Length: 182
Length: 182
DNA sequence: GTCTATATTCTGATAGAC
DNA sequence: GTCTATCAGAATATAGAC
Image 1 (tube, each protein chain N blue to C red):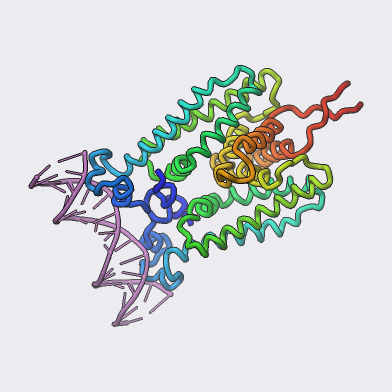
Image 2 (cartoon, chains in turn cyan, blue, green, yellow):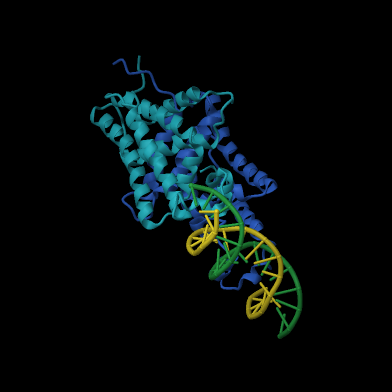
C-alpha cells in the first residue's frame, strides 16, 4: 500500500513489492493471482476496515452528537491511514469494472451513514440542509482534506484539528438563529 | 492530459500519446525533451491558467462578496477542467523535486488568495475564523470535491450547485448571531 | 512456499532518411 | 517535422527444481 501510494500502481513493479517484503518476485504469486487482484484486495480490506470501525463507534442517537462523532471519527481514521485513503481514491481507474463496483458500493455505504444522520437531523428540525446527499459529499471532501496537510507533531494536535473542523461542519448544517434584536 | 487523468502518468506510453494526437512516437520528441517534462508543462500551464483566471475575476473589495466570488469561481473553473485538476493533484509525486517546488509554489499562491480574503474578513469582524490557513484548506477541499460527483445535465445546474456550496461556506465562516430572545 | 530462469511483450528514447 | 527502425532495459507472469 505504501509503494502504491508513493509511486502509483502502474509505476510499482512486482519486483519492488517482493523486495519490500523480503522475497523474490515469483513468490508473490503464491499470495495473489496477479497485480490487479493485489490492488483490489488492499482496497477492499481498507473499505471493510472503515465500515467496521464506524460500526464500532456506536454513534449516539441524537443527530448533532452523531454528526460530531462522525466528523471526529472520519478525521482520525483517515489520517491514520493516509496511504490507503490515497490509493483507494486514486487507483479506482485501475480496477476491473466488477471490482470497481464492489469498492464503489462500499464507499456509498459509508456515505449513507453520514447522509442518514443528516436526514434524521433535518426531520427533527436540528439541521438546515436542503440537499443531504450534496452536503454529505461536501462534508466528507472537507474532512478527508485534512490528509493533504496534517502531519503529526505540528502546532495543532489531531484533537485540536478535529474540533476546528467539527465547528465548521456544525455551523454549515445547523440553522442560523435570527439576529438578536435585544 | 486526458490520458494521464484516465490511466495515470506511469501507465500511459509515449506511443499512446502519439496515437492520440496522430503522429508516431518519435515525433513527440520534437515537442518535449522527455515524458516527465511533458507532465510538468501540462501541470504548469494548468496552474498558470488558474491564477490568471482568478486575477481576471477582479474580486470585490468586500470580503463577503469576494468570498462568494471565489467559491463560485473555484467550482466553475475546476469542474470545467476535471482532468487537469485530477492530474495536478495526483501526479505531483512524478515530478522532479525542482518541478514539484514550482507547482507547489503556484498552488500556494492560489491558496493565499483565499486566505487573504478570510483574514480581511476577520479583521473587519465579518468572519469568525480562528485558523485562516486551516479554513482555507477546508474550503478548497470542499469546493474541489464537486468534481467527484458533478456531471452536466443532472438534476442540478452548476449555478445551483455553486449556490448550495456558497451557502455552506458562508455559514461556516460567518459569526453565529446570538439566539433571538424574542 | 521460495527459489532461479525465462518467455513474451512493452517501455522511453535515439539515429538517420527524407 | 515526421517517419521507420532500433537499442537497451524492464515489465508481468509462468515453469520447474528443491
